Image 1 (spheres, rainbow, N blue to C red):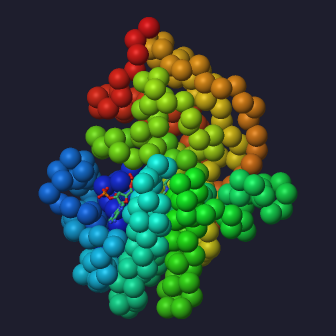
Image 2 (cartoon, rainbow, N blue to C red):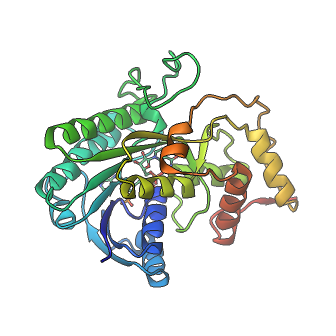
Length: 322
Ligand SMILES: NC(=O)c1ccc[n+]([C@@H]2O[C@H](COP(=O)([O-])OP(=O)(O)OC[C@H]3O[C@@H](n4cnc5c(N)ncnc54)[C@H](OP(=O)(O)O)[C@@H]3O)[C@@H](O)[C@H]2O)c1
């Protein structure tokens, strides 16, 4: 019998990939979205559902509304909690980032607590933001790993997102301990790779589209392919021995000059920003996710080319002709 999985924030960039991989494997997927009437946010999910073996149903739920997830979680086998605001520039970091991230996690997990008889595991999308310490660096003095916790961000304009992800992950672990529910966290660095929807409001998509169009050049240097993140989520659910956090990333930073060179070679008809030639630096120990979840990372050149190709062919990004 097919398993039933809930994916919160199903229409988002990362969640869409999780939904896609679950549908490919024949799962019954219950995706939550804030509003079913926003067709532009959900139509790509309906198309995926029509094309793949699994079955998808969409349900309205809001992170800030207590009890909002009760019905959708009832009877599910797995809950993938990916919904959380990911913006770097907000008016009020507490209101716009921290509250939905933390209360949202508590709300989703309290719905899980009411369905403990069926839910085998919660997979929470955390972030490298809950790990990285920009001032102190990794605690072992060498590479970041799953033992590192970001204890330096504040809920202000600069650190609001990082703070929101740290506190949301802590809320997840507290809940798991208190309620005895199995939890695994996936901690990605900056996610890039093919885009399925026509949405442009995800930070990953906005930044990469900006680079392609020559209007934005500050792409974060530590990166991971969205397909690897999707796979890490699914494996974290399916492998009974999966446990704790999984820092999911390439080990070394990649410069915007390298990105520019890769795009220029593949798309010689377009002009891309030159980028900055910063040296590549190994900063992350990614051995746990590779060994325990068996994730073989996509080559970043493939990630960049597939992201640019899908953005251009979907009419989302308009690169500058030479
Ligand atoms: N992209 C990255 O580089 C990256 C890296 C590390 C971790 N992450 C994590 O991955 C997850 C997904 O991020 P993403 O990059 O896929 O961004 P995204 O496309 O903007 O997705 C965010 C999702 O959260 C939902 N959401 C936000 N506020 C909500 C609320 N109040 N109630 C219900 N849903 C709400 C959004 O719903 P709507 O569809 O209604 O807008 C959207 O589906 C987040 O937890 C993020 O922190 C992302």
